[in-house]
Amino acid sequence: MDADGGSFATAITGIGLVTPAGIGVKENWDRLGSGLSSATTDVALQGLPVDFDCRVPEFDAAALLGGFEARQLERFVQLAVVAARQALDDAGWDPAGWDGARVGVVLGNSLGGARALEQQHTTLQESGPHRVSPLTIPMYMVNMVAGYVAIDIGAKGPSLVTATACASGTMAVGMARELLRSGACDIVLAGGTESALTPAVMAGLTKMGALSRNTTAPEHACRPFDADRDGFVAAEGAGVLVLERIADARARGAQVHAVVRGYGAATDAHHATAPEPGGRGIEQALRAALADAGVGPSDVDHVNAHGTSTPMNDVTEGRMLRRVLGARPAVTSTKGVTGHTLAAAGAVEAAFTALTIEHGSVPPTANLLRLDPELDIDVVSGAPRKMPVDVAVSTSLGFGGHNAALVLTAA
Image (cartoon, rainbow, N blue to C red; front, side, top):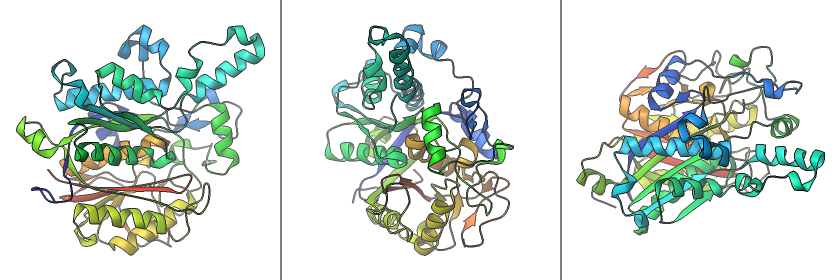
């Protein structure tokens, strides 16, 4: 236990967000409060059974990064670099003034540069191997997002990618916290990114029955915990947090958005894509996070749930939350606004959880009109709920049976 309580108190001193809700923290927070979905029909998916998704609006990579970098980097890396720069600016860090050997990068990603691979495969088939880009492999490889962010900011400490599907971003924050706890780093940029809204990926998600089929009203398709939900809406985005030891953050007079006090992870060992029906894996992860933070279930004020809008996930997770935490916490799923950003989701939602604590306001769950009658949890809907939030939980479940949970508290 440290002097601030919990097993290891880690300060969130910077937040960067590039999501379908907007580019920047203010834009994201304002859109979350509105409860308006970002889902729209996507011309790139024309002709597919599911032709809508959630894309980052007005993302001009050349303007934000420069033309050369924009051409060199695949979109999932571009999103992460912009979010990382935002987070550092928010934290008040100038890479020119730090010891890069003490700075680490841990980012979550699962599908890498799927778009680049699909495009280059088409080039190979149509024009032959001599026309394939020499950048194909670095643009496709999952690990390159950590490498490129490290290059961009001069981070020379450990850098790695967590690839645990939709739990990737949450696990990245947990792994980053361990780098600080061990003394390997003094600053870690942690988060997640994903941009794989390609025809092949979307067709695959459709065939496995994961996506909503509400093509007539995409803006109402993602409806977490609603009785009429029929699947998630795929999205792209990135979220990056700057993490420091809380004593170090206070010593330099940094603003602390919230504190990461607990982390837990577990595996279902049940099925490739379906959650364990009893929710025992995510329950194990959540109980471990609570124990790590040194708080009890009755202390939790708020849950930013995984809440994908799929029939199986929401019932499994909702029942687990009721069993472990009771009916007290105010629950929300911000995916109703952003869609499901896949490997970025846990990081984006950890950022949203920190902002909820900081602002004392729980965002509504978009499109929730009728709570699933099988659930007995307090899901916020309609409008933000103003309330003090001292202890909050963020949960993530991923294909492969990966589960992770974070406990965040007020600074």
